[in-house]
Image (cartoon, rainbow, N blue to C red):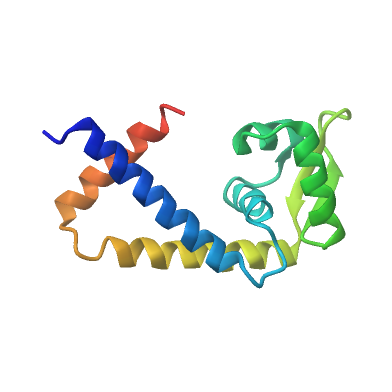
Length: 138
């Protein structure tokens, strides 16, 4: 069984490498990494209330409001009233935002294929299971 300290360092190294890759991919797109993550959440889950989006991103409503304001101004997102709750505002992607989401998601998919290309099917299944269980801890 691996030492927990080794596992800790491997997770940190992976996070650092993934973060560096994310920054390099976003560079030159006129979007910040935080804005890209906002686009990713809406692209993956569809329109949602601001509070729900802030919770998924792990940020405050104030921070999200500033983020969404910039994305609305850039014509990447839109705000619209909720169909059944007049007090709620939904945020959604525009066609431009959807295009950016699909492009970034494709880059993630290609990276996932690349970094797992030397794993056996059984290892991929184990990795997926472990990541899903770890994600439940957050």
